[in-house]
Length: 102
Image 1 (cartoon, rainbow, N blue to C red):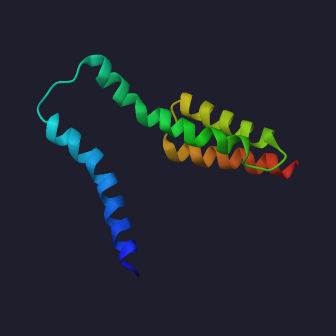
Image 2: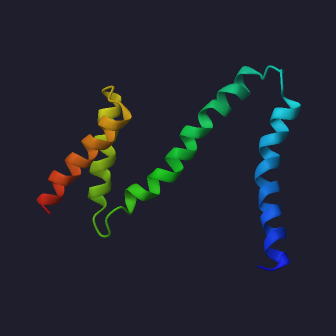
């Protein structure tokens, strides 16, 4: 391992540490406006949706319906009040049955 490896490692550590440290340092004890707080609280859901949606479309090559059925099942179970495990297991069960008829 050359010196470039350690410099790259240090650079990556700083790049991930600084965005976490700055808000804790400068916003400690300050109240954010409600609109900013609302936007920040919705970011995890937006990122999760952006990560999951492309996977729904390409989960099984040549069969987009497989992903759509899985997403619809997961959404329905979640809307009906199912927990995370029931959503995952329910979706797996529905897709297992659906794959038997392919």
